[in-house]
Length: 77
Image (cartoon, rainbow, N blue to C red; front, side, top):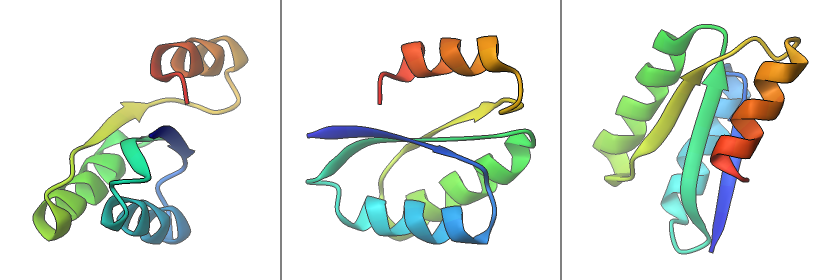
């Protein structure tokens, strides 16, 4: 139904992504981006283990506007 892009891989986004994955009928495509891709990958792995849902991960600096625009165009949230 919907594609979501979460920016940041802290505690709040981790909880939010896990909750979205638990509602896969609503959030059909989940993507997570942060400066540190390893944090995104760790959250994605946890989500996969707990829910079986795949989460796309990306490395990006949110202050780099052209890069953010490209990511938004790519993911189409």
